[in-house]
Amino acid sequence: MTAPALPQTSFHQVREALLARQEIALLDVREEDPFAQSHPLFAANLPAGKIELEAWTRIPRRDTFIVVYDNGEGLAEPAARKLQQLGYTQVTLLAGGLQGWRDAGGELFIDVNVPSKSFGELVEAERHTPSLAAEEVQALIDAKADVVVLDARRYDEYHTMNIPTGVSVPGAELVLRAQALAPNPATQIIVNCAGRTRSIIGTQSLVNAGIPNPVAALRNGTIGWLLAGQTLERGATRRFDPAVHADRERAPQQARSVADRAGVQRATRADLERFAAEAQRTTYLLDVRTPEEFAAGHLPGFRNTPGGQLVQETDHTAAVRGARIVLVDDDGVRANMSASWLAQMGWDVWVLDDAPAADFNETGAVANPVPEPEGPIAWVTPAQLAAWLNEESKERPGHTAVLDLTTSANYVQRHIPGAWFVIRSQLAQAVASIPKAQRYVLTCGSSLLARYAAQDLARLTGGAEVAVLEGGTLAWIAQGLPLEHGETRLASPRIDRYRRPYEGTDSPREAMQAYLDWEFGLVEQLGRDGTHGFRVI
Image (tube, rainbow, N blue to C red; front, side, top):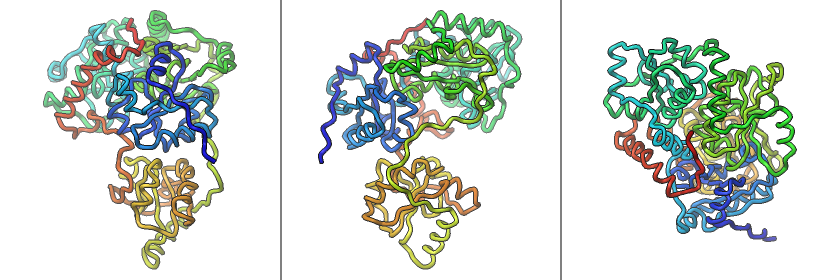
């Protein structure tokens, strides 16, 4: 029986919903690299192969208005059907896909996290956020001037490469920690990130909060530092001391004042109950403290999204534009500062004020809600798979094929010997390109994603034996079994992740400069798009 045709939504209907601040999830179901090459401003990237893992968390309300698109790859309709199977009732296709958006005159953006990056450029343009060139900062460091460099990125990014003397203080921590790290009000504070956005937002956060120190962004971040011919450190471990922070009365007052000016709303636990009862509204409950603090104790129902990354990656965390966001912390600083930026970015944002310490009583990580896979699954232990592969190498070549659905970066770092890298949404193409086997074993880091591919793989291989590795590659590693590394067998292209021009230390100068030039043009693009709804206090 042929499934009924999916309804379509036009570019103009999407635009009208955005301008009216109605809830809408505009989903690009391609992999991250093609998404980064061209997409609408408020598109959220939800790769087709990860829908089961991410949809219920990123789009929590089942009757959300959803518009799905691709660029002619044939991914959009199957992805829309999968969303319907997961219980979503208002799933549509973008008329004409990405090309239809372009043909209708829609503005298209490159790169990732574009709403945040374009907003950062607007902030600098309107507030003239102070900054210093890489050469000026190097001169201050060389002269042993009274200066501290605060790196506003995630710690793992900082650890990869950083400005000499820099200390890791992720963005939402700045107002809480800066004065403890620079207690002398005459000390010059420099805020940096890899490019521009988090430097601008971090610096302007300190300015908005009224920090007495002179504050400046490192102009163009580590990219500007490298383009100036200067040397970065690698492997640094300097971090803020979580036990040391600014005065617990002054910093919350400063942050609350900024949030009030931005129009942040105040929530109580009674409001949370009211929000939960509103069937027509999406509400994201987010704890913006560090992962360590969250794991030690958090409020039931809240998920952890450290504030700096939330502001940087709002499109990933909150895939439903127009939704409500409620933030919480335990200090009155990080939630208010993060909320102040989200409010300026056009979100309906609230801060929970009346949560006593005793209510932060859930511990550990929070698992994403995911559906059960279709049909029965045959499982294989790492020891049994190792025996099969040993038999394969000695007696039965071509009998067992291992397909690894992890990220390409994880695959290159380590994988089961002989395993093929496969992107789940390209499973059919991958199976057709690798030698036929009598038995197939699926894995990924934990096999959480792999188990969803078992039924599809069985259909594609025409009745071959299909099993899923218990515990995934992590279980294989835990048992001390052998590993390979490198791009040994790529059955799918490495398009699952877009390589940022500011990552690592080996990007060509031309790519880094082109990235900066693109950022400089974002304010003009926002004007042409006209749907952003941003305002700067």
